[in-house]
Amino acid sequence: NKIMKAQQKVSVRQNHSLVGSLLKVLVEETDPEQKQAVGRTYRDAPSVDGTVSFSYISGLKPGDIALVKITDALEYDLIGVEALESAE
Image 1 (cartoon, rainbow, N blue to C red):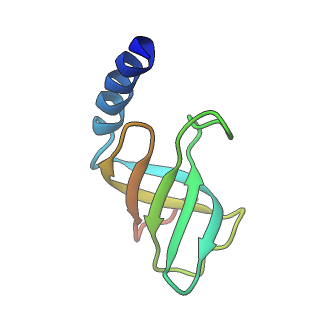
Image 2 (image 1 turned 135 degrees about the vertical axis):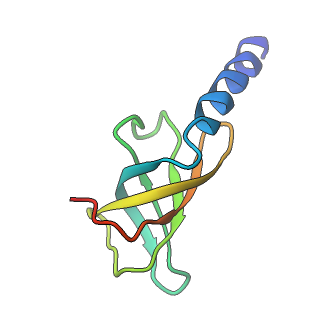
């Protein structure tokens, strides 16, 4: 427990340093009705690392790459909005 608590502090500090940045996110899931998506950046391994949850404007689908502006950070996950710039 002590090690996990210490790691959470490190992780949240690192994630907060990304607030305001633009990251390319591989879309894994979308909710077209809510215009919400979940994906991962190059630094996030499946089943191990956190995810990026974000609202989107365009018609994203799983497998797409979205450019996401990070607006908030949690211990392991990032929150953002799709940026208007192209991810390509």
